[in-house]
Length: 344
View 1: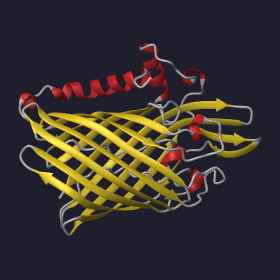
View 2: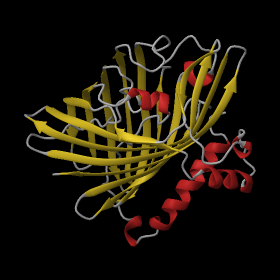
View 3: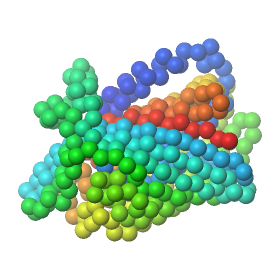
View 4: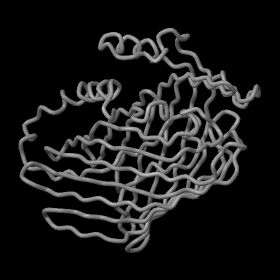
């Protein structure tokens, strides 16, 4: 079922967060705020170590212009599963801060860099999530009976312990270099359409033993598109991306790692005023691991991000979102996303 109990949980969270901001005298006026994608990926520790690109905007910066963004993703996860020869536990919280910079070159190109800082720990959200699920009669999935605020990422197969991380850690993750090429752009007072081709090269700069990196070099190539229409009811936008990624052999479950992966996004939004928009986005990717019967490893992932954006003074844009695993157990139960960006 596409919109299950956790989707309702995410919807309620975002509604509570944004409803107080919606009441504003300009909300009934025509809007010209463009709908842009969330800059976030699947925050599962065994996934975020690879080079999934968070940047899926179809807009390439003009020559001499620069763009900066700082994002924070907080993910709380609890999943455990056991078969005859496999056992996995993913219990903990991850925090990922990402600093991104882009610069326009010539009429059609841009280049950029992405620097993540990753931290793992037992966290503090377990009690809140259990209470929330109890209040709305949502399934706990075993979280309520597990030790609270624990860090335990472990996986064993055929009696061999292949992953075991139970200590907090933090540091620089895998740095990525990216580029974009404008393929098409058309606009006037009523619409703005864009198509761009993007690449991302992720380098093995993070410590793979602490799940801050994969130990692999990943190259992604993907196509991005967006359409924004400005109407008397506000701005209406759709966006999407699709591409593939090739990866060298890494250090995390190397005998089970896939060397090719496909990924994509699809989203839409509405901006009722020039200072606020609401949007939802689907992020999907194929499995990064093989030779496992566990959903957590060898099943394609689909997650939903619900939220919006606020235009702040100084031409800053603040994204606020909550994500959940639409394809259950292929992404963290709950992840919170904040993204602050500005162009110069």
